[in-house]
Length: 188
Image (cartoon, rainbow, N blue to C red; front, side, top):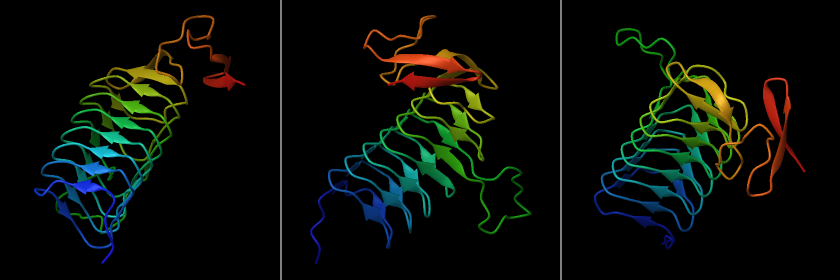
């Protein structure tokens, strides 16, 4: 029998054919469904549901009451705030089921999703982007974008470290950026 090198609270359910990386913690009343792949050193809070075949990278923090449905992929070091919402069907109808055809949603490395925000399926949230609490993402989000509102719109840029960038696009941490049209690029 393989020794597990991760923690799962006794109140949680882990289906067959699930991979959980070393150092990961799955807290109270959570459910990890068949085919899910969770990386190393993640933390899944209370009442988290990870749907079938969902992929979660390393170092991801998923706070309480989040459901990641089939079709969602989360890259490394993403933060999902409490009760943030993902969808996976663009036109849901109870009497017209989609039978496993789900829109893909990608959350890129280092992005942060605020409490109670919603990411409508079929979109990508860019690297190190910051989605404000309660925002509703209805289109792709560029890398480093600060998004707020309903629907979410870009209200600024953020550094990889999470601080809001001023007009010089240079952060207190020393990282520098430059705008290229509607995108931001880190200057190496």
